[in-house]
Amino acid sequence: MGFPIVTPAILNSLKEKLAPAAPEDFCDVAVTVSAVEYVPKLSRIEIAETLIAEKDILAYNMINLNDEQSQQFVEQSRQIISEHPSANYYWQMRTLFMSIMQNRGIPFENRMLLLNYAVKTAQGMYDNGQGERIPKFIDEFTSLTDYTPVLEYFKQIRPNPMYSLADGISLIKSLKKPNAAYKEVLSTIYKNLGVSGPETLKMIDVPKYIGMRKAYSEAMNSEKSIAMENIMINYIWSYSLPFAHTEFNFWDHFVFFGSLYNAVKILYTCYMPGKEDGDFAKAISAFDAALRISDPKLMHKVIYAMRNAGQNNNGDLAVLTLS
Image 1 (cartoon, rainbow, N blue to C red):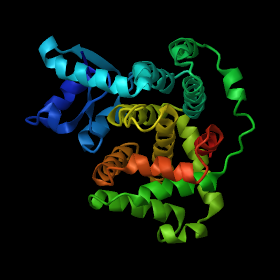
Image 2 (cartoon, rainbow, N blue to C red):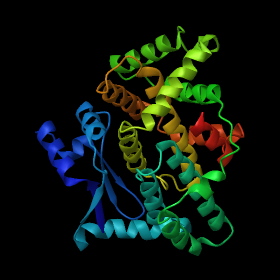
Image 3 (tube, rainbow, N blue to C red):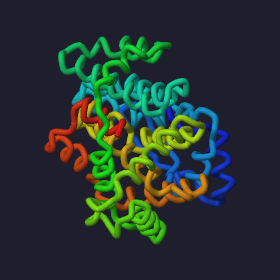
Image 4 (cartoon, rainbow, N blue to C red):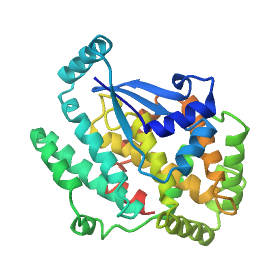
């Protein structure tokens, strides 16, 4: 059985920085449907700094466990697949997430739209009893060299900046405050928005926020998008997307991923004005620490809230991405 870990060079660097801590002390170790997944925790500032500074494509390499070590995981995987047949496509869907999110020939925001389209398509195949078509679809989709026809599908989407801001702030402020660093992040966000706190968001200077949002889009069209890419790739693994919770389908997991991305986007948009690039690592480390001590049912709450609000279709997620 495979044992994916972050690129060995990065892991070795982290071992040196964080010695004498063992990797298990600064990495998530999650047993998923097909493997044991080993992912560095962004809550550690050294890890956030390392991943944000990394310019090469972030990779998770496979290490094989021997048969004796693997047996318990093999049995567990068989049981999951028996109870949840969609788990047969776990690795194909993971490949889809990774391939699209790391396609640097495409602007970062467009990658979120492409993933939106592809996950929705694969979900439709599965729901219609055509799951066997998913592997071929993913192979063909990730091999495309021109995604213009797919992006045309979203051409009529109209951004709604205040919707994106409200959604992002809602998640950010709902988290428990683990330390002074996260309180400083929140304080800076509200200060940059020109308000005293979340209860006064309706009083923000909208043109100022629109300018901040434009600056974010410009940053995502530059090398700075690599930092966002690495953060979101890490969250794909740390949350075992797109099959973290068997009660949710592939699309539900993308809904959570889209909402999580929007929160990180708002974090960058509203925290970074006037800051140095290195400050983003501090903000992400604080944000990740808050995620980790908050409600263990956070994914459930986000998915159900968006579903109940009628904001969980692919058009809604596209608006969230583009706003």
